[in-house]
Image 1: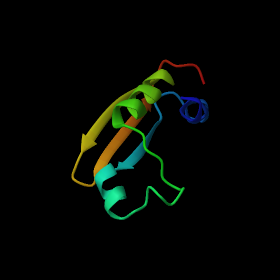
Image 2: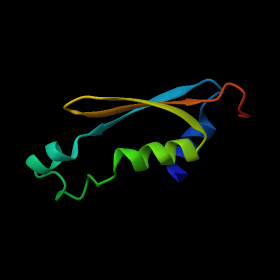
Image 3: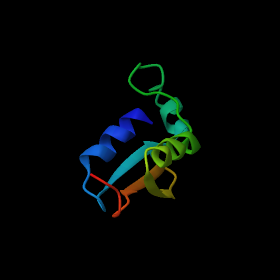
Length: 78
């Protein structure tokens, strides 16, 4: 959650950011998980980390992966 806490600290109240997470099957098919660049994280773990950092989270799934929209509460302190 620490990286997401840093993002939250940079956003104004009511601000948001979008995070795209590629489907793990795609990464395996393209052999990208062995590259050392990509890491395995479940979408549930990412959502939990975003919420722990104080974001309201919505997500949209597709065959390509998951798009998370993380919004900082408009009543949060900067």
